[in-house]
Image 1 (cartoon, one colour):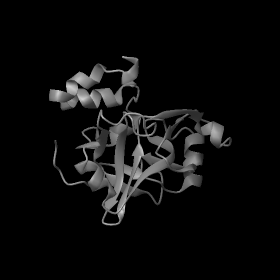
Image 2: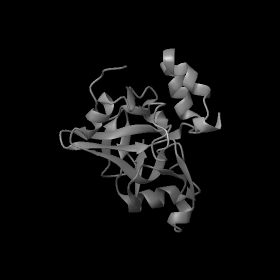
Image 3: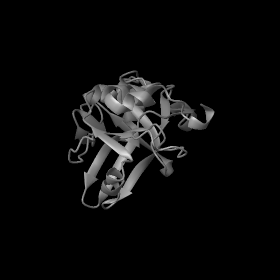
Image 4: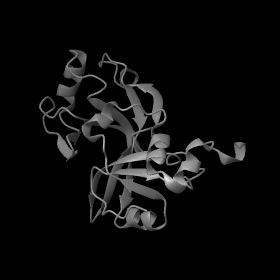
Length: 186
């Protein structure tokens, strides 16, 4: 087990033992904030059936919307790698930014200045209260890794992202890389 201290910008990979939890089974989460009061992250590998245009018709783009987590799923969040274009963004780490001026963002998408490799939208987020994530880590629910993709993670394909991360971990995790999502179907 990697025993790094949790910090924003890390990836949390769901342990293969998380089965039956629709939000977290085979999830990879980008930790957007972590402090003594709690943690916030976005599930980056669970696309929904919606596009940004479905939710905000005045945006003329078909960028996918992702399930960011089970908290506040009626709110739209976004991360991006273009702080020079989107004012009031907050840096997560490694050139990844969270939020910013949404009116500017809509205009920049509509005029073609922002591509799907620059921005990712989420409905909801994943949140943990004080010490909750540390407790889950001790219970072996999550594997923590550095984000080796840096700000390129925004454009990273999500279809097999959890499996790719498990293969990179190697060792005892390799057997899980080809296991069915629902082991009862095996």
